Structures are given as C-alpha cells and as structure tokens.
Amino acid sequence: MASSSPASAKELTNGSVRWTSSSLQELVDRLRTLLAIDRAVVISIVPSNPKIASMIPPSATGQPFQLAIEQAFLDGLPEDELSAVIAHELGHVWVSTHHPYLQTEELANAVAMRVVSRDSLERVYTKVWARDGSNEDIVKFLGPRMSTSAALAPNK
Ligand SMILES: [Zn+2]
Image (tube, rainbow, N blue to C red; front, side, top):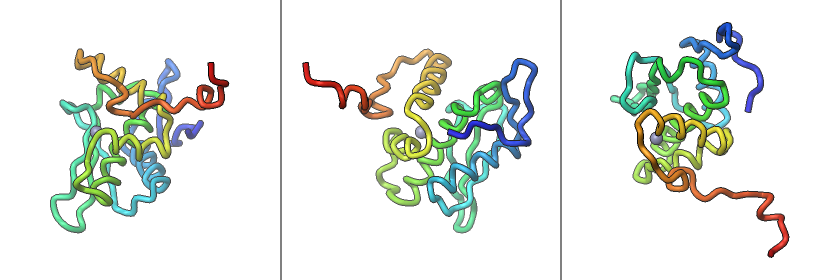
C-alpha cells in the first residue's frame, strides 16, 4: 500500500524497520481513516501475546479499542505485512462496531482487504502458522482467491 515508512520508524542496518509505538500508532490511524472507523484505537507493543496480535474491545463506553502486538513478531516485520496485521485487527474493530454478532476471522479479513492486499495477509498467516506449527487452510480465513487473470482467461 504505502511505499514510505512513517518518519518516526527507525531503519535497522539490514534495511528492515524497527517499529516504535509512535510509528505504529501513525499506521493504525492511517488505516483506521481509510476504513472509516470513527472510534479511537490505541496500539501497544507487548512482550508476549499468545495470539501475536489481538484486539481488546472497550471496557466501558467512551474508552478506546485496544490493539496489542508482540514485540518479537513485530521486529523486522516489513511495512506491508505490519499493515496487513493491523488492517486485520481493525477489521475486528469494524465488525464489532457494525455487525458485532458476525465476528469471524474471514469477515475481519474481508474488511482488511479493502486496504491491504490478500498476498500480504497470506504472508502474515504463513509466518504465524510457522510459529504455531499449525497448518490451516488459507481459504477458510481469506475466502477464495479472485484471480483477475483467471477471470479474463478464455475457457479451456
Ligand atoms: Zn483475527
């Protein structure tokens, strides 16, 4: 999506980005605006998170939604994959505020794919599952792939 990193993100010597709380928050707010979510969302970097990244709904009216992302997973994550993680979690925020009884991974991803590519989400799932040692069917999470080249190809 965006080609440049937020100004406050520091570049590591290997060219990857060291994400700071403020650069993460900028990214959250940018994607939140693109998704037309008008509720406040605050992200924090946590030492460990069994789900790697998660969304915590407000505990009381007027409180922000919270996202928590694990430091070790975050370190060295390229911007497009980080955007995919955040867009997925914002997808959950969007679902909570629009269709709270329909909260599923697939719907969160359908919302996320309004602003990030399916490929970037797929790369993130591959990393998450490699860490868990799990082997899931990507189609259950992202829905069937809509290939424009297949759609345009003549029937055989
Ligand atoms: Zn999710």
